[in-house]
Length: 85
Length: 373
Image 1: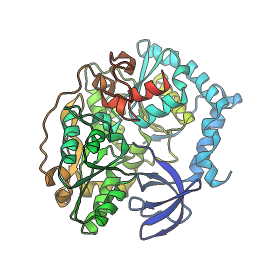
Image 2: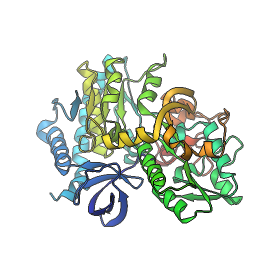
Image 3: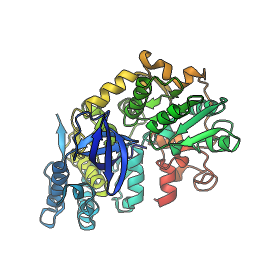
């Protein structure tokens, strides 16, 4: 039930956005992400955007995967991800 | 790479990288297990992880020393039998339209009925994609009472808070919702304070954490010394989350790490937290197999009490027994896996489910039944 899907904001008006999910368009509430803007990527759960996504960070994750699991780094022991604090 | 491709890239499911991740797991697991009594037990707290793990088939690749337990993270599964009975009592109210996520339709109450059966008997029950659909329905049907069945965790609670706030702003008098919400950090405390607890690490739910952030989990690492990794839902996320947990054990550390930092920020989503705190307040919640526990759930705040469906229709809470022989409770607490249940796959199947872990598409039993071990 905590499924959430990324999509791109095509347009917005009064905290309601039209969001493109790889070709499928839906109305999404931006009440939980008041700072979201046109062309932002948002993660959508049950009709509400719950977070703004950063394509940079997705790419960074993919790069980290390639680095730690790439064939030259089979025994990587460096940190992955962000630690609190 | 185009921006749109970064979130749906096939790299998230890349076979060669996955094989390398499993190879690393095979190296790390025996080293970790040597420090944890021969076996490492991790719990994926979230039902969406349970489903993602099962659907990927990766369980077969896990080293023998590693056991992934499903936790109390399937909303329908953790809802007490008493609250399920309240949902069915709401559906019996004349003139009421029940709106719900689909998962709730086939959960049986203590008299053996479910919403699906009530619909056949004439109740007006509609599956919606969003609680906003229920608010729109209430606006379109002013002569009917529209009730949304709100269950879930911190991912769903702010969404329902948002819908309720919109209903209030629109002055709708015929919309209400249940607030059978559960909170993840107190659920972890419940698991960890059990003397029989044998969990060595938590794969923390990605989308609950998108809302609440990392701070609420600090006590797990600091007080209980149990490693935590907030993890995404792609196969490589999950394999990496497990490896990060194993590495913490090997290094003798207990930290709250964030593998899913493309979505989860340290502070979570403050706007969602504010709205959730405006509409709801922390309260006792009744959990399947655990009972009613103070400060583990949410109820309507005083300012929004008029939108509380069980208050509006005066539906009291009554304890009700769980289905006989059903092991859902033990499974939710990480004490058993679905094949340990005598009913699993024999009496209890998705088409004739006894317990909620088989009913919900995110339940551990449904996942094991559909995809096998």
